[in-house]
Amino acid sequence: MSCSKEPGTIWSTSLYPPPNSHKIYLQTDLKELILNGDSLRIEQIILNLLTNAIRYAPGSFKIDVFILIENGVMKVGVRDRGIGIPEG
Image (tube, rainbow, N blue to C red):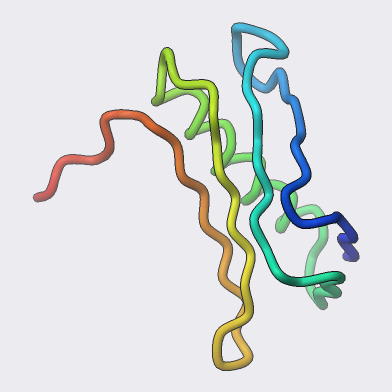
């Protein structure tokens, strides 16, 4: 799987109503990222994170996606402006 996007790129999505209202901001210093793995599963994981961010942050239309490499490990994070998960 290969991804090549300019840092700060904005994607619009309609994964969950209301359609075409969310802005997804990609934040990374990486110019290119090549992953060895099951591309369908990686896509499923990313879409699940984005869908949850949209679904559980009603009224919030900005979603940040972070991709970084730390100590040779890729880290992906998704942040929305929802109520969050209560601490247990």
